[in-house]
Image: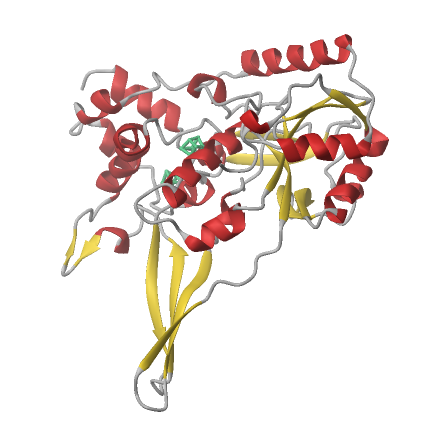
Length: 377
Ligand code: SF4
Ligand code: SF4
Protein backbone atom coordinates (compact mmCIF):
# COMPACT_ATOMS: atom_id res chain seq x y z
CA UNK A 1 0.00 0.00 0.00
CA UNK A 2 1.47 3.37 -0.99
CA UNK A 3 1.56 6.30 1.41
CA UNK A 4 -1.32 8.69 1.12
CA UNK A 5 -3.89 5.92 0.76
CA UNK A 6 -7.12 7.40 2.10
CA UNK A 7 -8.26 4.01 3.41
CA UNK A 8 -5.60 4.33 6.08
CA UNK A 9 -6.93 7.65 7.34
CA UNK A 10 -9.20 7.84 10.36
CA UNK A 11 -12.34 9.82 9.54
CA UNK A 12 -12.11 13.24 11.16
CA UNK A 13 -13.47 16.71 10.51
CA UNK A 14 -10.91 19.05 8.93
CA UNK A 15 -8.61 21.20 11.04
CA UNK A 16 -7.84 24.87 10.65
CA UNK A 17 -4.20 25.85 10.08
CA UNK A 18 -3.77 29.61 10.55
CA UNK A 19 -1.43 31.15 7.98
CA UNK A 20 1.09 32.16 10.67
CA UNK A 21 1.40 28.50 11.68
CA UNK A 22 2.40 27.15 8.24
CA UNK A 23 6.02 27.28 9.41
CA UNK A 24 5.07 24.87 12.23
CA UNK A 25 3.94 22.33 9.62
CA UNK A 26 7.30 22.63 7.82
CA UNK A 27 9.16 22.37 11.13
CA UNK A 28 7.28 19.24 12.23
CA UNK A 29 7.90 17.60 8.86
CA UNK A 30 11.63 18.39 9.18
CA UNK A 31 11.61 17.04 12.77
CA UNK A 32 10.06 13.83 11.42
CA UNK A 33 13.04 13.49 9.08
CA UNK A 34 11.59 14.91 5.85
CA UNK A 35 13.34 17.41 3.60
CA UNK A 36 10.57 19.79 2.46
CA UNK A 37 10.27 20.46 -1.28
CA UNK A 38 7.81 23.13 -2.29
CA UNK A 39 6.98 25.94 -4.69
CA UNK A 40 9.17 29.00 -4.99
CA UNK A 41 9.83 31.59 -7.69
CA UNK A 42 12.98 31.19 -9.75
CA UNK A 43 13.77 32.71 -13.17
CA UNK A 44 10.22 34.02 -13.51
CA UNK A 45 8.51 30.67 -12.94
CA UNK A 46 7.09 28.81 -9.96
CA UNK A 47 9.30 25.74 -9.50
CA UNK A 48 9.67 23.11 -6.78
CA UNK A 49 12.83 23.36 -4.71
CA UNK A 50 14.07 22.70 -1.19
CA UNK A 51 12.17 25.04 1.17
CA UNK A 52 14.28 26.66 3.86
CA UNK A 53 11.27 28.40 5.40
CA UNK A 54 7.75 29.51 4.70
CA UNK A 55 9.23 32.76 3.32
CA UNK A 56 10.32 30.81 0.20
CA UNK A 57 6.68 30.18 -0.81
CA UNK A 58 5.30 32.35 -3.67
CA UNK A 59 3.16 34.57 -1.43
CA UNK A 60 1.28 37.24 -3.36
CA UNK A 61 2.25 35.71 -6.72
CA UNK A 62 -0.08 34.38 -9.37
CA UNK A 63 0.43 33.01 -12.87
CA UNK A 64 -1.04 33.74 -16.25
CA UNK A 65 -0.96 31.06 -18.91
CA UNK A 66 -2.14 30.95 -22.50
CA UNK A 67 -1.00 28.76 -25.41
CA UNK A 68 2.74 29.34 -25.67
CA UNK A 69 2.85 31.79 -22.74
CA UNK A 70 3.62 31.57 -19.02
CA UNK A 71 4.05 34.65 -16.83
CA UNK A 72 4.06 35.28 -13.08
CA UNK A 73 2.93 38.56 -11.57
CA UNK A 74 1.78 40.02 -8.28
CA UNK A 75 -1.66 38.95 -7.12
CA UNK A 76 -1.86 41.81 -4.63
CA UNK A 77 -2.97 39.31 -1.97
CA UNK A 78 -1.43 37.24 0.80
CA UNK A 79 -2.12 33.77 -0.53
CA UNK A 80 0.77 31.39 -1.10
CA UNK A 81 -0.94 29.07 -3.60
CA UNK A 82 -2.98 31.49 -5.75
CA UNK A 83 -1.55 30.08 -8.97
CA UNK A 84 -2.24 27.06 -11.16
CA UNK A 85 0.99 25.18 -11.88
CA UNK A 86 4.55 25.71 -13.05
CA UNK A 87 6.56 23.69 -15.55
CA UNK A 88 7.17 20.83 -13.09
CA UNK A 89 4.95 18.41 -11.25
CA UNK A 90 6.33 15.57 -9.10
CA UNK A 91 7.85 13.80 -12.09
CA UNK A 92 11.45 15.14 -11.93
CA UNK A 93 11.59 14.31 -8.23
CA UNK A 94 10.80 10.61 -8.69
CA UNK A 95 11.71 9.85 -12.30
CA UNK A 96 15.04 11.67 -12.52
CA UNK A 97 15.76 13.46 -15.83
CA UNK A 98 19.19 11.77 -15.88
CA UNK A 99 20.58 9.10 -13.60
CA UNK A 100 23.02 6.22 -13.53
CA UNK A 101 21.16 2.93 -13.14
CA UNK A 102 24.13 0.64 -12.67
CA UNK A 103 27.91 0.45 -13.05
CA UNK A 104 30.25 -2.28 -14.15
CA UNK A 105 33.94 -2.58 -13.32
CA UNK A 106 36.65 -4.89 -14.55
CA UNK A 107 38.15 -6.94 -11.74
CA UNK A 108 41.90 -7.72 -11.54
CA UNK A 109 41.20 -11.26 -12.81
CA UNK A 110 39.47 -9.82 -15.90
CA UNK A 111 35.89 -10.65 -14.91
CA UNK A 112 33.20 -7.96 -14.79
CA UNK A 113 31.48 -6.93 -11.56
CA UNK A 114 28.07 -5.24 -11.75
CA UNK A 115 26.83 -2.91 -9.05
CA UNK A 116 23.65 -0.95 -8.44
CA UNK A 117 24.00 2.82 -8.53
CA UNK A 118 21.11 3.28 -6.13
CA UNK A 119 22.01 5.82 -3.46
CA UNK A 120 20.34 6.23 -0.09
CA UNK A 121 17.48 8.62 -0.83
CA UNK A 122 16.45 11.32 1.65
CA UNK A 123 12.85 11.24 2.88
CA UNK A 124 11.01 14.00 1.05
CA UNK A 125 7.83 15.94 1.86
CA UNK A 126 6.29 17.52 -1.24
CA UNK A 127 4.33 20.68 -0.45
CA UNK A 128 1.72 22.02 -2.86
CA UNK A 129 0.83 19.04 -5.07
CA UNK A 130 -2.19 19.77 -7.26
CA UNK A 131 -5.01 17.34 -8.00
CA UNK A 132 -3.74 16.85 -11.56
CA UNK A 133 -0.25 16.15 -10.18
CA UNK A 134 -1.65 13.45 -7.89
CA UNK A 135 -3.52 11.83 -10.80
CA UNK A 136 -0.26 11.90 -12.80
CA UNK A 137 1.62 10.43 -9.84
CA UNK A 138 -0.86 7.54 -9.67
CA UNK A 139 -0.18 6.85 -13.37
CA UNK A 140 3.59 7.00 -12.89
CA UNK A 141 3.26 4.64 -9.90
CA UNK A 142 1.29 2.27 -12.12
CA UNK A 143 3.96 2.41 -14.81
CA UNK A 144 7.09 2.24 -12.66
CA UNK A 145 5.93 0.10 -9.74
CA UNK A 146 3.07 -2.13 -10.84
CA UNK A 147 4.30 -3.63 -14.09
CA UNK A 148 6.10 -6.93 -14.49
CA UNK A 149 9.30 -5.26 -13.25
CA UNK A 150 9.28 -2.65 -10.52
CA UNK A 151 11.74 0.26 -10.96
CA UNK A 152 14.05 0.29 -7.93
CA UNK A 153 15.21 3.88 -8.45
CA UNK A 154 11.70 5.31 -8.68
CA UNK A 155 10.52 3.04 -5.84
CA UNK A 156 13.32 4.15 -3.52
CA UNK A 157 12.32 7.79 -3.85
CA UNK A 158 8.59 7.08 -3.80
CA UNK A 159 8.33 4.89 -0.72
CA UNK A 160 8.71 7.59 1.95
CA UNK A 161 7.26 10.53 0.03
CA UNK A 162 4.94 12.62 2.23
CA UNK A 163 2.48 14.65 0.17
CA UNK A 164 0.80 17.89 1.20
CA UNK A 165 -1.71 18.68 -1.54
CA UNK A 166 -3.37 22.06 -2.08
CA UNK A 167 -6.76 22.27 -3.78
CA UNK A 168 -6.73 24.56 -6.83
CA UNK A 169 -8.60 27.82 -6.54
CA UNK A 170 -6.89 29.70 -9.41
CA UNK A 171 -6.86 27.53 -12.55
CA UNK A 172 -5.00 28.87 -15.57
CA UNK A 173 -6.68 29.49 -18.89
CA UNK A 174 -4.87 26.37 -20.11
CA UNK A 175 -6.18 24.01 -17.37
CA UNK A 176 -8.84 21.39 -18.19
CA UNK A 177 -8.62 18.94 -15.28
CA UNK A 178 -12.39 19.17 -14.71
CA UNK A 179 -12.96 17.63 -18.15
CA UNK A 180 -10.57 14.73 -17.49
CA UNK A 181 -12.05 14.15 -14.01
CA UNK A 182 -8.74 14.80 -12.22
CA UNK A 183 -9.32 18.14 -10.48
CA UNK A 184 -9.45 20.86 -9.34
CA UNK A 185 -9.89 19.34 -5.83
CA UNK A 186 -7.51 16.70 -4.51
CA UNK A 187 -9.60 13.63 -3.65
CA UNK A 188 -7.02 11.02 -2.71
CA UNK A 189 -3.34 10.12 -2.91
CA UNK A 190 -2.20 12.70 -0.33
CA UNK A 191 -1.22 12.67 3.33
CA UNK A 192 -2.66 16.13 4.02
CA UNK A 193 -4.80 18.31 1.73
CA UNK A 194 -5.07 22.04 2.26
CA UNK A 195 -7.78 24.39 1.07
CA UNK A 196 -6.39 27.94 1.14
CA UNK A 197 -8.37 30.87 2.53
CA UNK A 198 -7.15 34.43 3.05
CA UNK A 199 -6.64 33.81 6.77
CA UNK A 200 -5.17 30.28 6.58
CA UNK A 201 -5.96 26.73 5.53
CA UNK A 202 -8.61 24.08 5.97
CA UNK A 203 -6.48 20.96 6.54
CA UNK A 204 -7.73 17.40 5.95
CA UNK A 205 -5.72 14.24 6.66
CA UNK A 206 -5.68 11.63 3.88
CA UNK A 207 -3.55 8.97 5.57
CA UNK A 208 -2.69 7.73 9.03
CA UNK A 209 0.63 9.60 9.05
CA UNK A 210 -1.09 12.76 7.79
CA UNK A 211 -3.48 12.40 10.69
CA UNK A 212 -0.55 12.03 13.12
CA UNK A 213 1.14 15.12 11.66
CA UNK A 214 -1.99 17.23 12.11
CA UNK A 215 -2.46 15.87 15.63
CA UNK A 216 1.08 16.95 16.56
CA UNK A 217 0.20 20.48 15.45
CA UNK A 218 -2.85 20.44 17.80
CA UNK A 219 -4.94 22.63 15.51
CA UNK A 220 -8.48 23.85 16.14
CA UNK A 221 -11.29 22.41 14.02
CA UNK A 222 -12.20 24.30 10.85
CA UNK A 223 -15.64 25.88 11.09
CA UNK A 224 -18.51 25.23 8.68
CA UNK A 225 -18.10 28.60 6.95
CA UNK A 226 -14.43 27.85 6.18
CA UNK A 227 -15.23 24.36 4.86
CA UNK A 228 -18.05 25.78 2.70
CA UNK A 229 -15.74 28.48 1.31
CA UNK A 230 -13.14 25.89 0.24
CA UNK A 231 -15.94 23.93 -1.46
CA UNK A 232 -17.18 27.08 -3.20
CA UNK A 233 -13.66 27.90 -4.42
CA UNK A 234 -13.30 24.41 -5.89
CA UNK A 235 -16.63 24.63 -7.73
CA UNK A 236 -15.67 28.06 -8.98
CA UNK A 237 -12.28 26.75 -10.16
CA UNK A 238 -14.02 23.99 -12.16
CA UNK A 239 -16.48 26.45 -13.68
CA UNK A 240 -13.68 28.83 -14.70
CA UNK A 241 -12.07 26.25 -16.98
CA UNK A 242 -12.67 27.08 -20.62
CA UNK A 243 -10.93 24.12 -22.26
CA UNK A 244 -11.95 20.47 -22.45
CA UNK A 245 -11.15 17.30 -24.32
CA UNK A 246 -13.96 15.97 -26.55
CA UNK A 247 -14.27 12.85 -24.35
CA UNK A 248 -12.46 10.78 -21.73
CA UNK A 249 -11.79 7.84 -24.04
CA UNK A 250 -10.77 8.93 -27.53
CA UNK A 251 -9.15 5.65 -28.51
CA UNK A 252 -11.66 4.61 -31.16
CA UNK A 253 -12.00 8.12 -32.62
CA UNK A 254 -8.22 8.63 -32.90
CA UNK A 255 -7.44 5.26 -34.43
CA UNK A 256 -10.31 5.71 -36.92
CA UNK A 257 -8.63 8.93 -38.09
CA UNK A 258 -4.98 7.96 -38.59
CA UNK A 259 -4.91 9.61 -42.02
CA UNK A 260 -6.81 12.76 -41.00
CA UNK A 261 -5.35 15.87 -42.74
CA UNK A 262 -5.10 17.58 -39.33
CA UNK A 263 -1.99 15.52 -38.52
CA UNK A 264 -0.17 17.39 -41.30
CA UNK A 265 -1.77 20.68 -40.25
CA UNK A 266 -0.28 20.32 -36.74
CA UNK A 267 3.04 19.05 -38.16
CA UNK A 268 3.36 22.25 -40.19
CA UNK A 269 3.43 24.21 -36.90
CA UNK A 270 5.17 21.73 -34.55
CA UNK A 271 8.93 22.14 -34.06
CA UNK A 272 9.42 18.56 -32.79
CA UNK A 273 11.19 20.16 -29.80
CA UNK A 274 9.74 17.76 -27.21
CA UNK A 275 8.87 20.52 -24.68
CA UNK A 276 5.38 19.05 -24.36
CA UNK A 277 6.70 15.64 -23.30
CA UNK A 278 9.24 17.16 -20.88
CA UNK A 279 6.63 19.14 -18.97
CA UNK A 280 3.96 16.43 -19.16
CA UNK A 281 3.68 14.84 -15.70
CA UNK A 282 2.71 11.44 -17.12
CA UNK A 283 5.22 11.00 -19.99
CA UNK A 284 7.78 8.36 -19.06
CA UNK A 285 9.74 7.66 -22.28
CA UNK A 286 13.47 7.46 -21.80
CA UNK A 287 16.63 6.23 -23.46
CA UNK A 288 19.46 4.22 -21.90
CA UNK A 289 23.09 4.69 -22.89
CA UNK A 290 26.29 2.95 -21.90
CA UNK A 291 29.26 5.23 -21.08
CA UNK A 292 32.43 3.10 -20.94
CA UNK A 293 35.78 4.51 -19.77
CA UNK A 294 38.35 4.59 -22.54
CA UNK A 295 40.72 2.32 -20.57
CA UNK A 296 38.02 -0.35 -20.33
CA UNK A 297 38.18 -0.36 -16.51
CA UNK A 298 34.53 0.57 -15.89
CA UNK A 299 31.29 1.63 -17.48
CA UNK A 300 28.12 3.49 -16.45
CA UNK A 301 24.62 2.69 -17.65
CA UNK A 302 22.65 5.96 -17.77
CA UNK A 303 18.94 6.60 -18.19
CA UNK A 304 17.77 9.97 -19.59
CA UNK A 305 14.35 11.37 -20.42
CA UNK A 306 13.56 10.93 -24.08
CA UNK A 307 10.61 12.05 -26.17
CA UNK A 308 8.59 10.55 -28.99
CA UNK A 309 9.43 13.76 -30.86
CA UNK A 310 13.14 12.90 -31.25
CA UNK A 311 14.48 11.12 -34.30
CA UNK A 312 16.32 8.57 -32.19
CA UNK A 313 13.26 7.53 -30.22
CA UNK A 314 11.83 5.43 -33.05
CA UNK A 315 15.16 4.24 -34.44
CA UNK A 316 15.57 0.49 -34.63
CA UNK A 317 18.54 -1.11 -36.32
CA UNK A 318 18.96 0.93 -39.50
CA UNK A 319 15.44 2.33 -39.65
CA UNK A 320 13.67 5.34 -38.15
CA UNK A 321 10.04 4.27 -37.92
CA UNK A 322 8.68 7.79 -37.43
CA UNK A 323 10.88 9.98 -39.68
CA UNK A 324 8.69 13.10 -39.73
CA UNK A 325 6.82 15.38 -37.34
CA UNK A 326 3.40 14.23 -38.60
CA UNK A 327 3.98 10.66 -37.47
CA UNK A 328 5.65 11.75 -34.20
CA UNK A 329 2.82 14.04 -33.15
CA UNK A 330 0.36 11.31 -34.15
CA UNK A 331 2.29 8.80 -32.02
CA UNK A 332 2.15 11.17 -29.03
CA UNK A 333 -1.57 11.89 -29.25
CA UNK A 334 -2.75 8.39 -30.17
CA UNK A 335 -0.70 6.93 -27.31
CA UNK A 336 -1.51 9.59 -24.71
CA UNK A 337 -5.25 9.76 -25.40
CA UNK A 338 -5.78 6.38 -27.09
CA UNK A 339 -3.70 3.30 -26.36
CA UNK A 340 -3.03 4.34 -22.73
CA UNK A 341 -6.54 2.99 -22.09
CA UNK A 342 -5.33 -0.52 -22.96
CA UNK A 343 -2.11 -0.16 -20.97
CA UNK A 344 -3.28 1.70 -17.86
CA UNK A 345 -7.08 1.68 -17.94
CA UNK A 346 -7.43 5.40 -18.56
CA UNK A 347 -6.17 8.28 -20.68
CA UNK A 348 -2.60 9.50 -20.10
CA UNK A 349 -3.77 13.11 -19.86
CA UNK A 350 -4.71 14.62 -16.50
CA UNK A 351 -5.66 18.03 -17.89
CA UNK A 352 -2.82 20.07 -16.36
CA UNK A 353 -2.42 22.15 -19.53
CA UNK A 354 1.38 22.33 -19.25
CA UNK A 355 1.94 21.09 -22.81
CA UNK A 356 -0.21 24.00 -24.06
CA UNK A 357 1.56 26.74 -22.08
CA UNK A 358 5.10 25.48 -22.66
CA UNK A 359 4.76 24.69 -26.37
CA UNK A 360 6.79 27.44 -28.06
CA UNK A 361 4.26 27.68 -30.89
CA UNK A 362 1.17 27.30 -28.69
CA UNK A 363 -0.16 23.98 -30.00
CA UNK A 364 -3.20 23.08 -27.91
CA UNK A 365 -3.89 19.39 -27.27
CA UNK A 366 -7.61 20.05 -26.68
CA UNK A 367 -7.93 21.86 -30.01
CA UNK A 368 -6.03 19.18 -31.96
CA UNK A 369 -7.92 16.29 -30.32
CA UNK A 370 -11.24 18.01 -31.04
CA UNK A 371 -10.32 18.66 -34.66
CA UNK A 372 -9.28 15.04 -35.23
CA UNK A 373 -11.96 13.28 -33.19
CA UNK A 374 -14.97 15.46 -33.91
CA UNK A 375 -14.56 16.77 -37.43
CA UNK A 376 -14.64 14.20 -40.20
CA UNK A 377 -11.71 14.50 -42.67
S1 SF4 B 1 -0.87 15.82 -22.24
FE1 SF4 B 1 -0.62 18.01 -21.70
S2 SF4 B 1 -2.44 18.54 -20.49
FE2 SF4 B 1 -2.31 16.30 -20.57
S3 SF4 B 1 -1.19 15.69 -18.71
FE3 SF4 B 1 0.34 15.91 -20.34
S4 SF4 B 1 1.06 18.05 -20.19
FE4 SF4 B 1 -0.84 17.90 -19.00
S1 SF4 C 1 3.75 20.20 -29.92
FE1 SF4 C 1 4.88 22.09 -29.32
S2 SF4 C 1 6.08 21.49 -27.53
FE2 SF4 C 1 5.44 19.59 -28.54
S3 SF4 C 1 7.14 19.07 -29.95
FE3 SF4 C 1 5.68 20.29 -31.15
S4 SF4 C 1 6.42 22.42 -30.95
FE4 SF4 C 1 7.45 21.24 -29.32
